[in-house]
Length: 118
Image 1 (tube, helix red, strand yellow):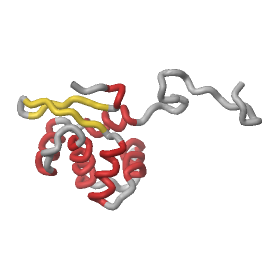
Image 2 (cartoon, one colour):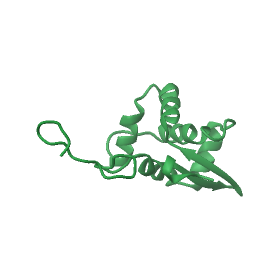
Image 3 (cartoon, rainbow, N blue to C red):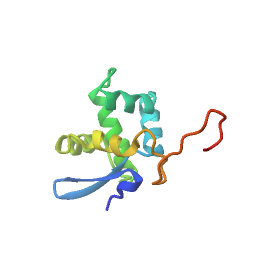
């Protein structure tokens, strides 16, 4: 079962459950496969800017699924994506905390002009 607190989401394809996560390992797998910067690609997808190809989207899906399913192939990742078209966008949303989110469940504290905490 997927743990949304770890950036994981659950998907179903042909009656089988899958889990994906856009974690550091997935981003490294994407970069190794494409030679492209994963963070820039995620930002381009999230903000709907730049030129992100369908091939890049499928490789990102593969990389995210591969973290839980070592046997994952690019064609299977594409099929799963076709049935779960919003999966990459959902994973990006979960993996990208809101500005001001300190990542530990507590609001981030602002620093004073001197660099010390108030």
